[in-house]
Every structure is written in C-alpha cells, then in structure tokens.
Length: 461
Image 1 (spheres, rainbow, N blue to C red):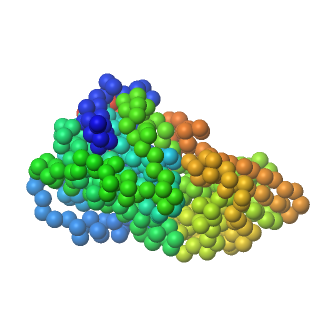
Image 2: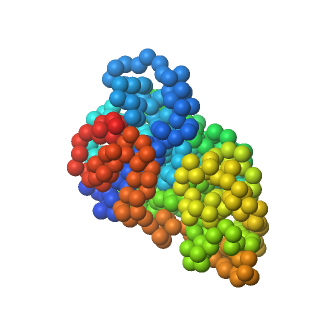
C-alpha cells in the first residue's frame, strides 16, 4: 500500500510544466504576483523597521554563493534563511495575502518568498517556478483540507505554519532538483516539527507575521537534512503518532479520503482566494455586505442608527470594539466594519492607524452589535468551509431597515478575481513604494513569467 507521503512526494518531484493545465499556469502566476505585491508593501510599511532590524541581527557569515539580495536593497545581501524569513514576514504585513478556505491559512506568504529565494540561488526559470508553486500549493491544500476547518477552529493551530512547513519542504526540494525519495524524507522530517498557534489573534501581537516564516525555515532545514541522508517516517502523515493524529480537531474530524486523489488533474491552486480587505478573512463577507449597503443606499455615518451583525461562534470571537494595535484592528468585527462604512474600503495600513483617532469611526463602532445566530450557526454546520457567513441588518435614522446575507466573500472560487482586479490590487500595494515607478513592468513580467529565465530584477527597485 502506498503511504500518503509517497504519493505526495512522487507527485511533487515528478510534476512537469507540460503536465499543468492552462488554468493552473494562470493562477500559479497570479499567486506569485499577489504575494510579491504584498512583500513589496511589507518592505516599506510601519513594521518594516523591526523586520530590517531583525535581518541585521540575524545575519551571519555565509558562503558567497548562498547570498540573497534583500528586497529593495541594491547592495545588501544576506543568507537564504534570513532572506526567506524576513521576506515572509513582509508578505503578511498588509493582511492582503492569498488563502485557501478549505485548508485555511495563507500559502502564498510562506511559499512565494521561498520560491523567489530558491529561484535566485539555483537560477530557475519561470516555467520551473510555476511548476514548483503549483506542486507546493497542492501539498498545502490537500493536507489542510483533511484537518480543517476543525484544526483551526477547535484547537487554534495556524495552517499557514502547520501545512506550510511540509509544502515548503516540497517546494524547496523541487527547486533544488531533489528526487522523489529525498523529497519524501524532507517532507516527512518537516511534518515532525511543524506548528503555529493563533493566540496572537486575541491581543494583536506580532505572531501573525512570523508564523509563515517559521514554517518556511522548518521546510528548508528539512530539505538540507534530507540532502545529508537524514530520513523521515514512512507513515509521517497517517501514522499512529503522525501528522494527522497530532492535528485532528477536538471533534475528531479528519478526512484523508482526498489527500492523494486526482493528483495532477485537480490542481488546488486554481481554488485559491485573493483578498480585497486588509483584515482577517473571516470578516470579509461582513465587509462585502457593509460596502454593498453603503453603495446601494448612499449611506453616510450620520444616516446610520444601528447595525446588527449576526454570525457564527467562529466569527463572534472576533467581536472587539476597542482594538489597541493594527493586528488587533484587523481582527475586530466592529472596527473594520466602521472603517469600511465610513471610507468605502478597508485596504490600507494608514487607514487603520488614522481611524484609531477618528471620532466618526469610533461613533460607528458604538452602533454595531455582534451576536451569535442559531441560523448562521446551523448554516455553518452544513457548510463548514463557508466560515465567513454572516447576516447584516442595518437600520437608518429615518427608520429604514436593510439586510444582507453573505455566505462567501468576493475573491473566492465562486467569485474569483481576474487579472484586471489583481492589477488594481497590485498597483495599490506597490504604488507608494520605490517599486511604484516600475509597477507596470513588474506586473507584465510576472503575468508573463513563463517566458523569463532571470527573476533577479524583482529584488531591485
């Protein structure tokens, strides 16, 4: 009997560009573009000083051939471990990185920084990069589908780190030319040491932007260990004390049925979601409803009497009218809703910080109630991947009442972004940075990545 680690490692090691569907190639390029835009934004956001301070502190002497340029730094190079870690942190700062709702978490912010680093070090071309990212997204998604949303909702594990570490091992193995056996051992080793917790969501501390980098480093180290001859368990995933046993939800839910099914036919990258709002994904359906109401009825803050947000216990935990940090604000139902209602958007770091002292935003926050709703809870039980589902009831000062029911937010597989919407988002992320002057060239380069052999221009501004 083939074990799951064999199935996944054979697939990742042997996948060729010619095996990919047109849609997988297209979305593979889109996720690279989206994560790169997030990286550029993160390089110049308010957290960037801390990130660059860490890069200087963590830097150690490395062989010249292992040096990697730091994003936006013409003459500053660092070791690959530090480069991947800090670029992964940058990719999470905007909270606009992609995700996969069936698996939870954010594969782009862990896998794309690693991909760019390995492409630089090993001189991989665009087709090789696209193939590697499609394979890695498959590993991430298939592991996450088996254990989520229950692992995340019930136990507080962050799939970005948990599934991302094993996917990172698959990606780096692919980019370094490892065979299926070495890839299997690297993935097995990484599965033993993966993790990540979401307690940071409750107080807005810094763990959010570190989880993906930590997972990437785990995958990288596992590949190096496997290259030296170290081995991972044969039953690393489904073994008695293996990956799935460790991360099964408290309800006992763990479905291994589809982990290895349709490999090479059903490319999971094609079901990725892209984010419109710079906040926790669970809030996106609510914000879509807010913006729809605002636009449909020309609502200003002064016209609003009250807003009742009815949702599941999963989203109710994000009820926090008084966040103290930017990360906390991005996980606050009331705060993000108030910002979206006043400004018609929730996509800017500056917008978040300015809204902390905006009296109109604070007044709106006071008009918003969040409650657990039995109907929404029952809907979620039957549709567990629709974890954003919510009903919004808005009453105006003139006595009019408007309702919106939104089970799935924009940007998901039912309502996908196209290249044009991704371009608007990319321009928004990079236009205020030194890369903004060449945003058109960068967008066109990544949209046509399969035609290029050298990605180093992406690091230079």
